[in-house]
Amino acid sequence: MRTRGAAPPRPAPKADAYRLLAATGIHKGDREYQQDQVALLVHPRHKGCVLAVVADGMGGRSGGRKASDQVMLTARQLFERYSPITDDAEILLKNLVAESHLVIRLTAISSEQEPHSTLAAFVINPGGDCHWVHSGDSRIYHFRAGQLAFRTKDHSYVQALVDRGELTEAEAQNHPRSNILVGCLGTESEPPAALHTIQRLQPGDVLLACSDGVWHYFTPTELASVLEALTPREASEFLIDKARSRAGGAGDNLSLAVVKVDGVPAP
Image 1 (cartoon, rainbow, N blue to C red):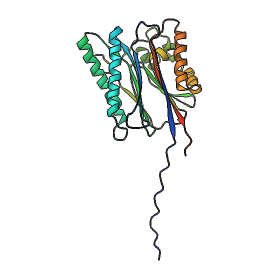
Image 2 (image 1 turned 60 degrees about the horizontal axis):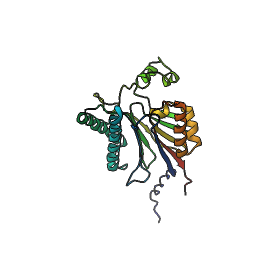
Image 3 (image 1 turned 90 degrees about the horizontal axis):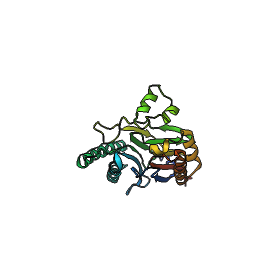
Image 4 (image 1 turned 135 degrees about the vertical axis):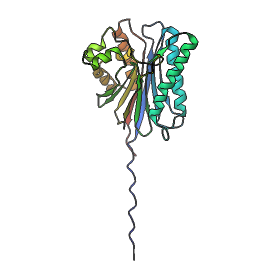
């Protein structure tokens, strides 16, 4: 006599295989000194886990650079201790904002300067989920199928006018007060920390983090077209060159990090 037991569980479907193509770019622009910083960090223990960080320092020649340097140092320290298996990515990013802000404030006390910095950072986990945080007017864009899927909203005076319907996005782009921030790292008040999550990246998705020295000279449609047509390295070089040209000799520091999700046929 044969007895029939429960059917064995079906194996879970395998996640789509993919690889990440990435590049960073940085240029002094037409400034006398470089206050931007950018980094693309690969996790030392977890394959497929990366952290991209852009920081636009403010506060004079040495002050702004000190601020953006502190953001990068804090990012490296926190990311080395991070585990995508056991840790929450949003907590990592919140800590990045809070600890960078605190260190910059301490730097201001010891050096009698007023260093400030923006922050735009995203982490991609091996499972394909992506999380980001930003503070100030450095931006993160998510493009899918050659279209803008989502982007950060600046913590700035003109963004507040756009939110109230007093300005259009196009008008805000060239507003004379577009550089006035209402929140960033290093100020007396607590910095904003706007979070966003992409549950699962798809092949063809592109993420762009950049300072205002880059995005100020492009529409989202232009950025989407460039990032879809070119590799991350080619796109980084093109966007910097084009922004320099459009600035007409009055350009800010430029920094950007590009990550493209490239589909790989499953074995």
